[in-house]
Length: 242
Image 1: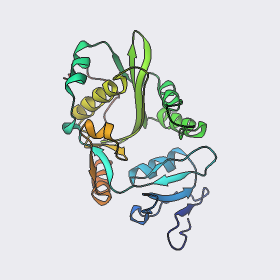
Image 2 (image 1 turned 180 degrees about the vertical axis):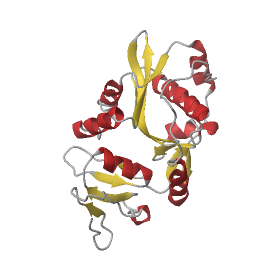
Image 3 (image 1 turned 60 degrees about the vertical axis):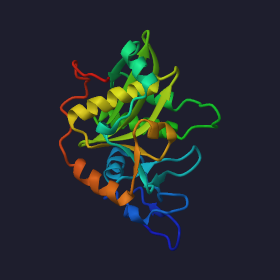
Image 4 (image 1 turned 120 degrees about the vertical axis):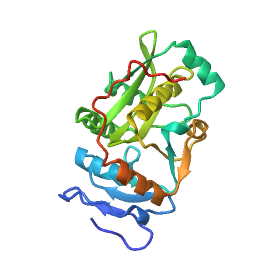
């Protein structure tokens, strides 16, 4: 691992057996949070990154870029806010929500084209890496179906009692929000400390997410990642969301 002089990110050696990252406090302020370049997307490196509050985010044709922005958007499960309209949708019970029933389909849908955007940051390499993370028991998906069809969902990485959210999609109104609410309620049941939402969006803020200074975020996940994970990723049969 080599740190470049001045305001340049660190370059990661893909052959580094220790898979080290620089301290997150060395991340750039412009662009906000860019910490390192290169390395690989192995399970070991990804888990090492998440434990330190670092995540990959890059476009097709770019090298792997690693980020640790400041502040960090997080949601404490008990702080979830459900709007009146979303509450009505949840009470109707039109959607079927599951965990880990089709991770490849969820990440594939998250990688699909979106209005006003060219390309995707969820490249084929990223999809393959997170499917491997899922198969190793670390990445998880939430599926939201309507009349048997997958219409929304999200995926992320769980370590200890922290859920690091990555992406969500919706092909019909409220589908991703419904998936998110069910996930948050289940994580709260399991005693998860927080959900990492990475960067600020008005959508997540409306659901109760808030900004945390990076240093505070780092201290919280260092403790919560050491906690034992839940025994199995299944929705509790008696779980209530509203």
